Amino acid sequence: MNDPRREILSQVAAGTISAEEGAARLEGLESNPPSPAPEPPVLSPAGSSVKQIRLVSRFGNTQILGDPGVTGAVADGPHTARQEGDTMVIEQTSLTDEAGFTFSQPRGRVFIPGFDFARELTVRMNPSLPLSAKVQAGNLSIRGLQGAVKGDVQAGNCSISEFRGPLQLNVTAGNVTASGRLDGGASAIRCKMGEVQVVLEKTSSVRIKARAMMGEVSITGVGATSATELTLGSGDGTLDCDCTMGTVHVAVE
Image (cartoon, rainbow, N blue to C red; front, side):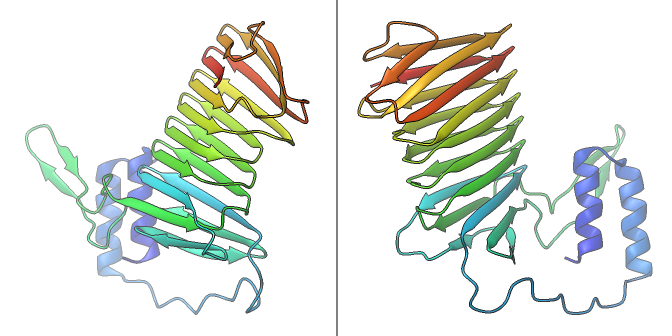
């Protein structure tokens, strides 16, 4: 499917344009097909190394697995990928090659058969590389990464397990569960109208602080004597939790 059709379907799914307008635009594309686009320029020189991964996930399910046998990242499933300098960018898409509109009467319900929410993208990446992920109205699962993880979750769900690097998480009307160990670096969790649950290994070395505004934060488990502050080990790293109209729970096991 060409890019103009994909853009039209994305606008309909996001509510930017109506289904009727989308159908009219698709008809226009069929009657006036665009001329072939020139070959895109190479974004990075051959042989350039990948130093970080950036993922964008919308309306779908994405799984990211740490794999030491992978130099950069390998994706399997509905996606587009490109390299920008030393960053590999992977965008998950729920659009298939067969797309169109079907209207049913009398209520005018719209079906988009080329828009498949059930399709899953699996990404295997080198666990030492940092990851930046953005999730919108979808589900993201991350397992076995040692590098830093930065996540922006909006109206979606994100699960992170077996992490070993710093976390930077921003959650808006979404849910995040994370389990692993923190031994250094600066980690932060910002939650607005969402729910965050973090389980840290008791062998972690981190200073934890939690704050809430019209929300709830708690720290429980091994060594916890306060609901808002806790130091594990020598406190080499930091974890700051801020919550606004949501819930953040940190447990030590």
